[in-house]
Length: 213
Image (cartoon, rainbow, N blue to C red; front, side, top):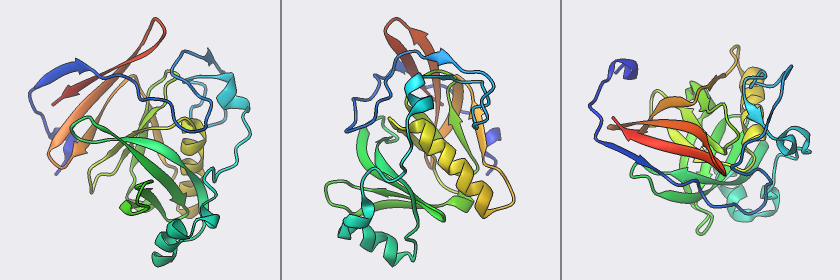
């Protein structure tokens, strides 16, 4: 089905609070300063914080190689090249937030329950079409997967996560992952639910609004 042609009447219009702080990370939900001449996927079109621009990136923030449960998951898939690993918040179709371990290898994205260390989802990088982000200094992003339902998440290290996603896609294939910067975009929250999320600056931070479609 061509999702761009799916049109549904809005059912709900409301505000959803920003996610709580994560363990580690130093990005927040406030406004930042505009950076120009950027050679990252944001190409100077996104408000970024000095902290995200000058922070040293280290990739695996969870020391996955020292955690047997996580390594067993990757080894079972024959996939042990860890490019990025950190805790994120995943938003469900109903709007609930769930903590997840996010691991990116050169073949796939893994989402793992941090309490049970059980894999909840594996997405081949070849299935990812693009990533959607606002132009503001928030922690939210969507990963668009045309053959499945999409991911809407929040990460305190979003800038690094997106950069690594772009780099690994470019090195593993003949195309560059599209990064869409817009303060309003849609994503498939489930197989049968399309949501539109919008972002706007407000006093004290970034206001997010979700519309069921």
